[in-house]
Length: 252
Image (cartoon, rainbow, N blue to C red; front, top):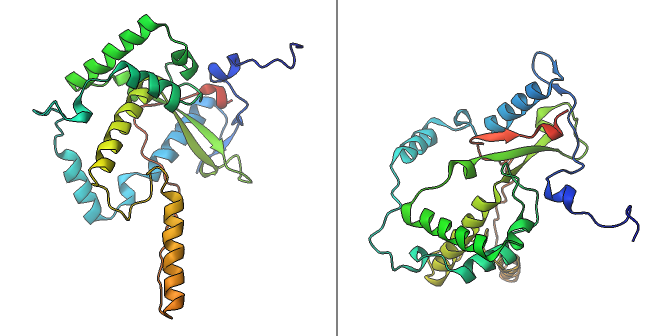
């Protein structure tokens, strides 16, 4: 196969891609061209979307009081299914079934590396995850993320609001989150804790939501009654970034 047509995953593994590069952004007072200034302006814009200043006083008071409450992850019941040590088959399944070959985070560790990891390294990773689970600690490095601004279709590339953020987190942290998330969802589903009216973020229930809505519409038509539905379209839904790194590869 000619070199020009042979597939080469090196570029994808390294996180390099053909994203739109930002050469200029408009602030309130001037035009910015320096990559560091552009990164700071984007960071300020993304942070402002979910800033406390957007909330009313009542909600903000409740939010701050709730966030001030200390959270303890320690429990006396270590026999609960979601508190058991992570098993080797559980770790392998999460790596091969739940990890996508997306771009790496700040640690530059790609999912493809874990899918081809040596058995000795896999055993070390398993012991590391179980130590984190037992001690209730979480690596600060795994809380870092690289945020890549993606230009929205047909939008002005010089306006900060024209970009949506893509967050790339460390793949090791992502892997541990997927394992714990799967455990929690299993516990919630198997114990019928979730409301039957909640369809979002639940596997296989998107079609069920449409079916239920269609049934209610048909029932209302047959009984000649009224049916009211409320649809929310959230503008710029994005959580406040914590400690983040803006990749200079996409800001030039």
